[in-house]
Amino acid sequence: MEELQPKTVSQSRTEQVQIVMPEHINGYDRLFGGKLVEWIDIVAGVVARRHSNRNITTVSIDNLHFKAAAHVNNTVVLIGQITHVGNTSMEVRVDTFVESLCGEKKLVNRAYLVMVALNDEERPTKVPSLIIETEEERLEWEAGAKRSALRKQRSIEAY
Image (cartoon, rainbow, N blue to C red; front, side, top):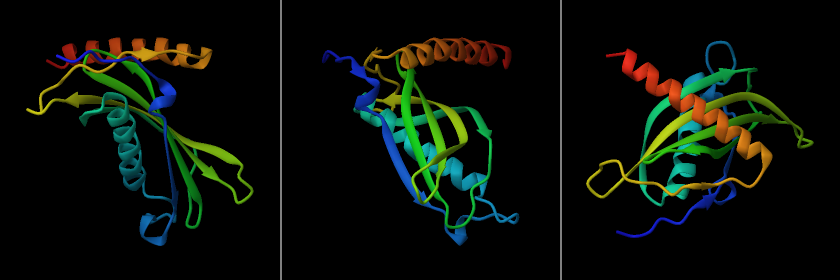
């Protein structure tokens, strides 16, 4: 079995940019929430694949908070990064911004997703540990550990 080398948050950080088109709009002339969830899931998947060097699957979208709307012709920027890792799971935060033409970004959504790395038999497999380099990363790690414990508690209570 190969030794997994720890990785930094920056090694898997991912940014995706979209322009909101008319086909992305709901009945209220805003970005359809389902389309944004699709984009968020893709970004989180790329982050998790980069961190684990494995295929992954989405286990849960833990938190999805819409702070503001995006409209046709807005530039939407999604930035994903690992916040916490377990044995086979990775928590990924995806921040979504609307970017003005002058480059100013306004946060419109923050989501936390849990992804699991899969081996060749599509079974959960170990992921690299995370090297924490900044105070922000340390705070996210600690908050991610609390979210992980809450997820485990909720899953036990569900049965």
